Image (cartoon, rainbow, N blue to C red; front, top):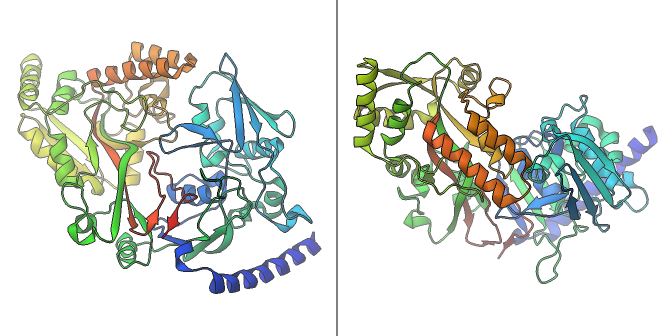
Length: 534
């Protein structure tokens, strides 16, 4: 092992000098895509792709069995086809035989090899290894067995039906990695990644810069038969200050920036969510639905009797103007949540009417509550964090108009999360970003067997009919029929009002005018394989 290590060190040093020289000589700016990652990157190992910054980087380097297109349809990736058994318990994948790992000396004289079914067996089992301690083990919580049938056939058996399972397999956690390289580096694989993706690892100076180079072995082609990716390199910097990163973008030093920060949202966008006139000649805005529902939740088994009364919860849903809130507080970067918890961007989005602004209806419900209970001055405390003070104060003023006293309490984000999980707050601000593209992800927040702190049901909502439909949906393999069940569940949530949906978030991406081919998807996953700089 010592001799291999020595040889590998010499090889890497030599390669570094050769590659750096080539980079200076041959790569022009139009072949390098640059962006800043203010949140930093902690690992390039897909087993640790928990946060967006790591997910984006891993998406450049790795592939899995299946992938998502920009409309969240599940498409082949390394698996060219698959069969789901009639009982929805067994998934059999047939792999392509022309997928190669990115080159590495540990593969021997050819410096690479094809991906086999046994590689997926190893990679997925690795998520369950307690010594690895991957945060992604939960994606396999319903899996009974993982087994390669031969080099090209791979099978996963579930313990119970779970229609969203293929969506889970699109997550970067489920990427394929080579056992021999992972075994050699151990935990340091995080900084020596080898995958099959469009870009391969070149250089990582932690907290400063990450450089990826085009993978010449990448298998995907465009519609004309040209090999992807078009770019030669991706360069990622790690300026922690979002405003500094934004300034770099405006100065033309970066090709792309994502999201809106209060420090610059009014600088680049008008109040109605359009580019400010001075940027229209240099910048493109790409926007669309983001699978994130911002909401307020009521603790349904708490001690505040006003919160426990449905009339109060419904009145608060009716009692504020969502479009006004989005326009003035979020520069129109969101869609008013008047259709329940399932956000726009999912095929099962519910077009049924929820709560629109109706101040007279809200006042009437409050009056009915006061007459029926004798509680003439109900007081409710909203627990939130500093980032949402503006929304909290806006709602406080709106609810005063309907005769309700809501006090706003500010806590640090970590303290608030703990208080929500343990039931120490009765009314709280929260959000839910989808882990996978299926509405079950949102409806799980209201299933009675998912009570927090063990599960995500933070409101402790319990409804027999909701639970029945939720369990029925797990057995339904027909997507359209399952979506109808989801919409019925969402309608129960609208009626019972354990939450106040505020808005469905939007992805906001900004690029320089010379960037083409950068798509947008509701999971806000960054894919650069089709990007060109012109």
